[in-house]
Length: 69
Image 1 (cartoon, rainbow, N blue to C red):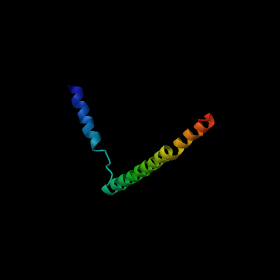
Image 2 (spheres, one colour):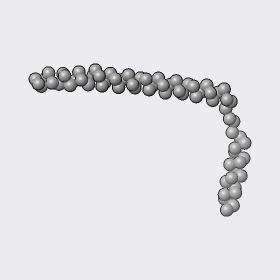
Image 3 (cartoon, rainbow, N blue to C red):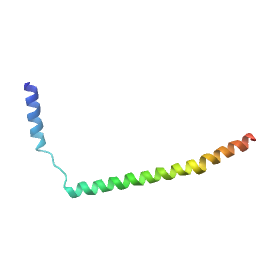
Image 4 (cartoon, rainbow, N blue to C red):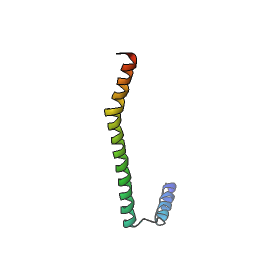
């Protein structure tokens, strides 16, 4: 039981040493993360469309031509 008490006293002591970011910094970094995630989402979506609608059917047609089908 003494170990738990010692642990939580240490946690309480360290909790006071935390330097929390200001609200403006949190909002700015959150917006940056959302913009980057959105950009990668759009990039992946465009690549998916290109592969699905152009590249893969083109490769299938090329294979069929080579096979003589």
